[in-house]
Image (cartoon, rainbow, N blue to C red; front, side, top):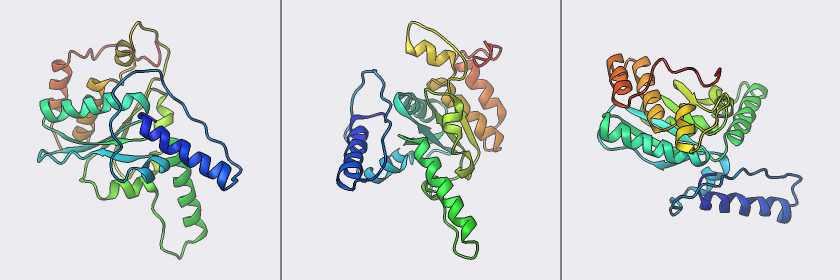
Length: 229
């Protein structure tokens, strides 16, 4: 979870399931010691928090093309900042999703797959990820977290679009998280760059716009891969 209200919803549901309903489950929650403003809980976010993702910001600002940005944990704040760069400086709209649990999203997706396999003649179920993205405008999906790429990549089978994942593969040390995230290529500038490259791969924008952004944000294209340094 990124925000206090997400944590409150998760703990409340955990208490209900473990104490009131006496379910044989346990909850594993990871929190980070980073200080930032805690916003009010969006309307109707409760179900999405528990299922693993919900829409935080609708990017309907009249600009095209459009992308879907997912963030988990504190990196969500960089995702929001990346959406602002795309909107204000790069002419791209972005919907922002908070993803408190890629693990829950995968579990639900596996459950839908299993049900479909065992009920081949029935109407096939859609994963929750697919349901969330189904009504959004066309465009690629970019996910970022402070963990290895495999964390957010585990929902790839359920994303019905081009899907690009940013994560902290490798080993790095720094005096500030801002520099560490830049080293691992998961900060707002790389999030915006990943969105542009995905749009270019979908032939929605020319590749030259990606190259322009690399120059604009002083990104070194020959920088060593942090996963192998």
